[in-house]
Length: 74
Image (cartoon, rainbow, N blue to C red; front, side, top):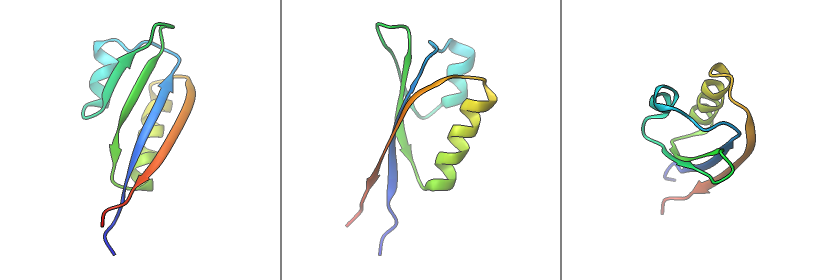
C-alpha cells in the first residue's frame, strides 16, 4: 500500500505580510477580498499537518477554517 498525502486548505483571519509568509514556504498563499489569507498545499502525513497547525499557533494567527483531503496514490 502506497502512503497518501494530505491536501490542506486553511483560511487565516489575517492577511500575511512578507515576513510571516516566509514561514509557509512551499504553500500557496492567496489574499481574499475580506483581508484573510487562504493557505493551500500538500503535507505528507498527519504529523506534518500538526506541525503546520503549531506554526500557525506560534505565529499567533487566527484560524477561520481547516479543510483536509486525503490524496490517495494508486
